[in-house]
Length: 207
Length: 223
Image 1 (cartoon, rainbow over the protein chains, first blue to last red):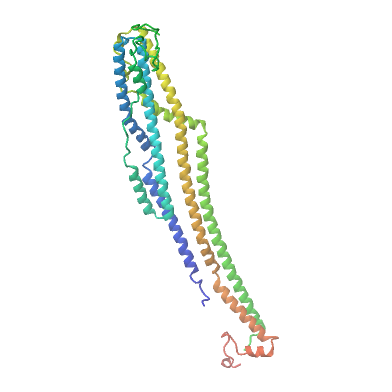
Image 2: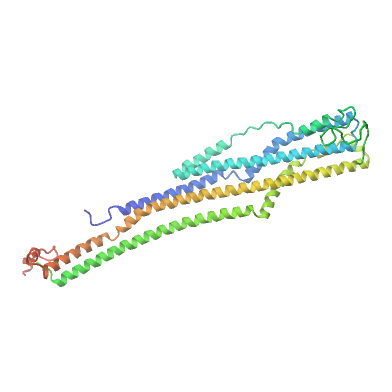
């Protein structure tokens, strides 16, 4: 039996404390690595994501709008209404529809950016959980890099569908009725149209 | 040999003193260990509390009308920017419109203004909805990150507390030498007292010649 010393209790306690301090230090260091790796996912990154989507989708909106404008001009020319207030209204309707679609595209871009933000945050959360469980900062740093790589996989985007379907329908109906050459002017609703019955070629100005 | 009662009592008292100081040493070390752990736990708790307060402050911002307006403005700016046509001249142009009477041109301008007004209204309404979504998402992320850190600090607290028992065990060992020696001295003094005064004759006899090595042998000094 030993009367002197403490049987190694101090050494054991000191070693345990050192181990715990080192574990905490590794976790804090791992968090710094995670913050650094994920730091690139900042507001500018997500704004660019939204802008990229707009850059992809807006030309399609513009192209479809151009096509609709041409169809409108043809329909107005066919019915002799090119220089009329009804034509002005219809053109304004097309411009408004185009703007509505552009707003939709921009909104979708922002929503996609937010979705990506959620994905990034979920990935970051997984890496942090891994770090907490293992206390291994190197493994966490590697996991963060893997997460970034998987996030960088390109997402597939299909071309936009026909955005001006309702407008195209209303344009197609301009002059489609023998008795009412102007149907299609009433907000795309078809039917009676803006003008009084029988006025097949009446020109309306200054409504 | 036997100790004079006074010497025996002194040895016993010294032993008690050593034991007392040994125990005090252990007690102080235990308290020091406990306080050190308490300070560590307090530090973690303060850090956790700071994160918790940050989450609350972030959530309060969601209900702040100025913050809501700022979030809506940010989204609105992005939406309105998208409505800027690549070719605005072409949009308003219809063949023949350039030679239209002034009243037709005015009608075109009015129609365009009305359409723009409706577009702006749509953008603003959508931005108000989306702005709140943006705010809530930012808040969720912030709360989530704070929660991660709070959980992490909870792990630190548990880990640190796990070491405390070993440290307390080690602290209890402090002054062990003093306590052991003190106990020994107490026993010696007690036995010497018993041997020196009032003990049964046999017992006294039995202790004669026991000097624990503290005194020279009787013959050696000519006693």
